[in-house]
Image (cartoon, one colour):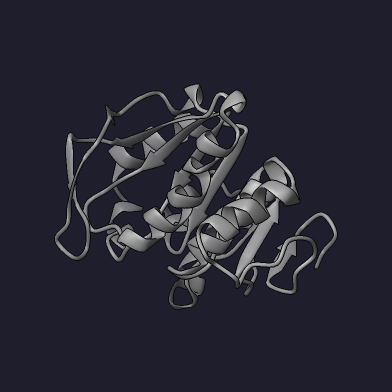
Length: 201
């Protein structure tokens, strides 16, 4: 599985790190699974909303090359959703097997037209902003609608990562990563924190 982690100026660090910490551990736990990832952006260096700098591994790749594309949130998403360069680039993810966002990253997916006809969630402060972009804004920690996975605010990125990992592998793998990370809060299987559009709960 080849994953693209999207970076942009003003992103929230935990949005990115929570999810990537979970998903990249799969490479060590299941080396036979052929896991790889790139940190991708429109420019070579990014500064997050706390002033931490990042050097990206790929600049503006065609996102159709990836099996999974992940978009974190951050206050700057409110402006970036009107940036034609950002939206045109994200639209190349249309054919990815799995689209994932946490917090207000869903605003960028939505503005790129990737949430049409889908149920999704975002940070509670952005429910109204997300409404025009999707079929329904669901007030849940995690929402799955087919190949689309969205998480609510910031810390949900860890739970979202474990949920996506569980769905793409199995419960045992997710539980092993969870134990590895000393993170006792996620429960595999059915959870009231997850809304699955396929079953409506």
